[in-house]
Image (tube, rainbow, N blue to C red; front, side, top):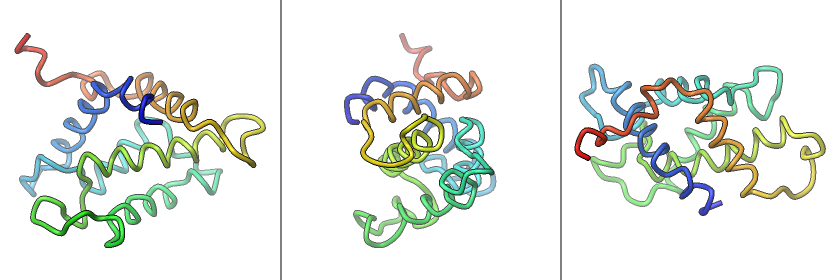
Length: 144
């Protein structure tokens, strides 16, 4: 799935910037994504399917918590907080959400192995379609 993530890296970086700033009101932390911003991102993308146990809001919240568990966190510093997502953590979650969403929405994918490149590509394409325009805006475009 690395190639699929790389294909959409500009959009993913813009998404990370947008949602990290979105949740910074009050905290001043514009370099990581808060839980509320993450929940909004998942809903904006259309990944939350309330009638599917693998893609409901609770499962998405569990992924957020799992990526912040001590076993997955690289280091505990003031820049890698347990209650927010760093960029690498968002990419980790996108891969896992892609797998869950693909299984929930693609016929005959509910069981057995799936092609993760296709799953991640489909998830990124869905993000591109559903996200608000400002979430996909590269903050460095004016520098060109």
